[in-house]
Length: 243
Ligand SMILES: [Zn+2]
Ligand SMILES: [Zn+2]
Image 1 (cartoon, rainbow, N blue to C red):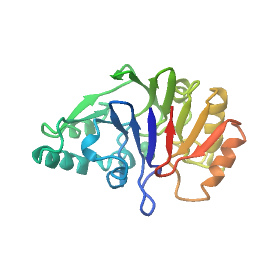
Image 2 (image 1 turned 90 degrees about the vertical axis):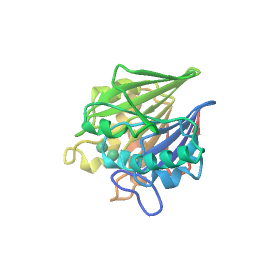
Image 3 (image 1 turned 180 degrees about the vertical axis):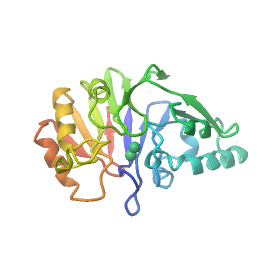
């Protein structure tokens, strides 16, 4: 599987960039993970919107879903001009009425996911864990050919994120707060906590994402490295990871 970073910002995108969105590609499938603001404009540098098969949504905060709604218009136009051949599948949980808005005529089909769901896209298997966040949020694990890629969604320190990221070959983890924020801000992970989880879980490659808009974000990597000695990368637009 190949993962391309489309957007790596929490809350809102910085100039010319996007908030949370990642493109995951296998031999036969193109899947978007979250679709925050700026994602639609950015993802088209790498793939046509008509070629995306499915979107998997971690939770219903705007920095993860804002561009779903203009995407629905795109699917309608593409269907009616013969460019899109099959509906866009949009997977999200049902703990919020926002689920009802994912469906859009025959162009976008909503599908429920929760901690019991296993999705199979050919040999790619996807499973989920609830995490702890002000809005219910799912972390996701993608497995193919004996390798695993885990995406945290948004979460604070909890059993769900610790459990799902065990032995991940690539762990794409939100890193929204600096160590100095520990105990003051809630709902997200501090750099030290990301390092602690990754170290305990024997993560092979850690990719930091969902960055804050204050401080010097390269400090996050430094603070994580105090707790985790493996490979650490900062997500940035267009960066590619392969497993
Ligand atoms: Zn977020
Ligand atoms: Zn959130």
